[in-house]
Amino acid sequence: MNYRLHHLWSAVRNLVIVLVASLVTLGAIAHPVLALDYNQENLTGADFSGRVLTDSSFTKTNLKKSNLSHTDLRGVSLFGANFQEANLEGANLTNATLDTAKFAKANLTNAILEGAFAFNAKFDKAIVDGADFTDVLLREDVREQLCQLAKGTNPTTGRNTRDTLMCE
Image (cartoon, rainbow, N blue to C red):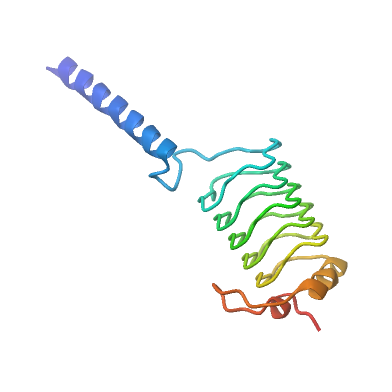
């Protein structure tokens, strides 16, 4: 009897594993079973729009021209990532690690970066309309550069971009 129960339990467990893996693949489950490690990968032009990637890591990843619009990246390591010409419109980057990331010509319209660590990040010619930079650690010269570009109010947080950057 014990052998039969063990065999039945193994069959049920394997069925559950296959079912969960299928749901993750089809996108029916927003949170993957395991964290996704994209560290140091070349993901040029990738489409992550609308995904929940809070358990992922993109350290030193090339995301040039990628679509991360409306993506949940809260707390994610994006250290040294390349976001050149990437679309991050409406992305949630709250408490993300953005140090040494490159946002040249990136679209950060209505993005939320609250509490992110971005001390050595570069934002050359980035679009920051409506972006929320509340409590983001930035170098003073980068903050001044962003103040020249800043306008609008974030529709989610209701905060003015210039105010969140403490522009004069």
